[in-house]
Length: 230
Image (cartoon, rainbow, N blue to C red; front, side):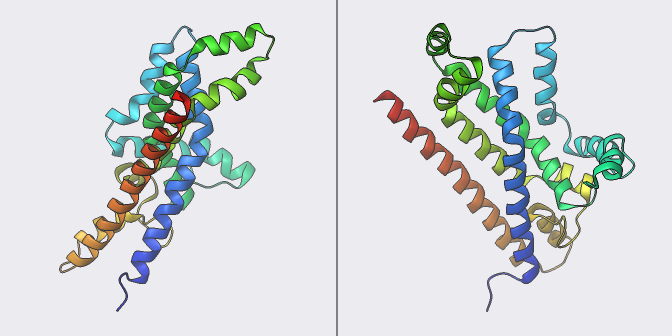
C-alpha cells in the first residue's frame, strides 16, 4: 500500500517547488536589503526597516489581498506584466511563490542584517584603503564573512514558505496541481470527514522538511563559524 496518494505527492512536490523558488528568487534582494540596512545611513531608513518587516505583523490575509490588488490579472503591476511580458501570478504556482517570498522576506533580511552587523568592518576598511573597489570589497570580504547568516536567512525563508497559508490561499486560492501546497492541502482535508490519516501524513512531511532545513542551516553556521575562529 502506498504511503501517499497521488494528490498528496503532488502537493508535496509543489510545496518544495514553491518554497525553493521563493527562497532563491528573494535571496539577492534579501542580501541587498540586509546590506543597505546594515551599512548605510539615510533619511527614511527607519520607515524602510518597518516596511520590510510589515508582513510579520500584518494578518497574512491582508498581505494576500494587497498582492491580489497589485499582481492580480487586473492589478496595477499584474496587468502590466501580463500585457507586456506574458507573466501571470494570479492563481498560478508562481503567485504562490511570490506570496511565500513576501512572507519570508522579513526573516531573511533580519538574519542577513544581523550577520552583516556582526562582521568586522575594519577588514572592509582595510581593503578599501588598499584601493579595492566597493564591489570587490563586498564580494571578497563582506560576502564570505556573512555567508553563514545568508544561508540561515535562506533556510528560514524556505521553512516559512513551506508553512505559508493565509497569504497564499488569498492570492492564488487552492487549485489542485497548480497552487495547492502542503498547508492548503491539509486545510482542505480538514473539511473532509475521516481524512485524519492524510492530515497527519502531510503534517509529518511538513515538519520533517522544515526541521531538516533549520538543522542544515544551523550545521552550516557552526561549521563556517568554527573555520573563521580557527
